[in-house]
Image (cartoon, rainbow, N blue to C red):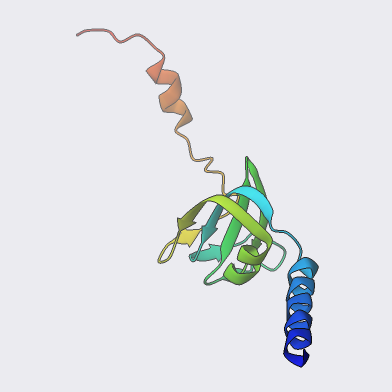
Length: 108
């Protein structure tokens, strides 16, 4: 009987621990394991780091374990050995070439 009571107590304790943990949020993508260079106020660098992305939104940037604990991604990219720049928008263009490309060419 004591064994049954002890087993029941262990099961109840295990259920309580699982129930107390928050559910992981479903998101589209996690990029994990790379060196994440942020553009926050302190220009934090996380190595290894992770970026949680849902649709077009960067949901969170953090260490790998924290992101894995909070989010369930449909897809994960292993970025080990890579640099990750969340939010980088490449505005590099050659405006003069885009204007010229629209002009008809003439044969010589």
